[in-house]
Length: 161
Image (spheres, rainbow, N blue to C red):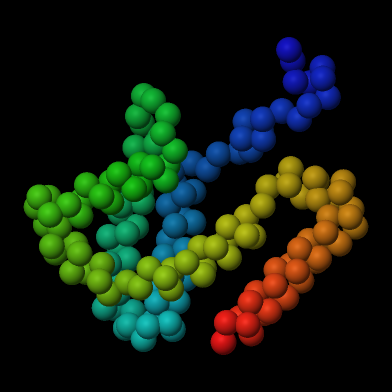
């Protein structure tokens, strides 16, 4: 049955525009730069000390994204990036000790903040239109959920401390 005849929304993934490999590369450079600054601010690691590790991460991610584009079967890019990163850091892989030595300068928790901030800001047009259609109801529900979660966490923290 045709989704448009039933009034159902078509697959959002099919409607969204995919980034090219070059666009991914540019966005990744920006994210890596922000992550380097976050690593410096959070851990105090000098930018030049962490730069080789960040370049390694950049190369691994780009290799995973390239595999996503060229492989004859579908596997999400996060899976390809994970497979590449595991393959190059295995103890049997030549040069893995050198890679891991440079990657030790990167605090991966400090990278989470800019990446999650970008993910939160990178909403599609369809999500914005859904938000507009929902109106004040979704804002009210969101505020109540956030407030309830915060208050629940505060109560549990007070009881445990």
